[in-house]
Length: 220
Image (cartoon, rainbow, N blue to C red; front, side):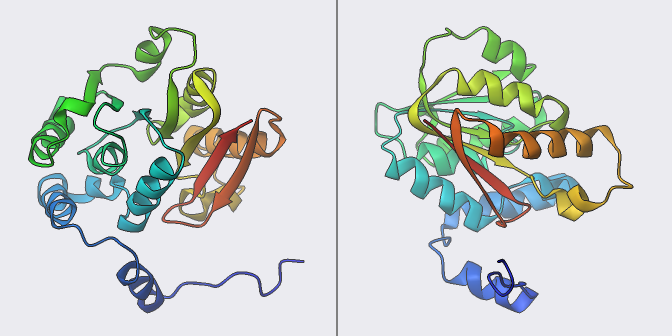
């Protein structure tokens, strides 16, 4: 039974939720503001504050040393993950936009995290394919073009240690996953991976209604 086991958030309740998390970081707030000013409507691609806090908590909780993200944008999520890593930790960031990631590089420097982060510009699948096949990551985040997200998942999973985590963003797609009239390529790709993950016996998976929906997968 699911009746009564969830709560519909009003804008006021959402503001209350955000206010009662550890989201109050001046540098991240500055980055969010600059992203909004410079990117206009594209700024909606940035993760939400509570999502970033969750990423930091999870990466720290599993003792992550090496992480990868596909889709860096202006660097908010990278800061959240890199801060959770130890001094000798590494984060590989994959993106295609020099414009967006130029903002990210600026804020990584401000945060004192540049030494932990390697940015690879170019198609992420090419970057991932070029990596050694042996396991090398503790934590992965996928927030990029939806048509390739199943391929990103497979490439990261094969390089993820046991008990490592992969987080996948936008799994609810603003509710469009339920709109069967929406047959766009992106929506179909999201539905296909959403349907696949609960039956993938290599992982345990949970979908959470945070921001635009996040699925967290633990490699067995």
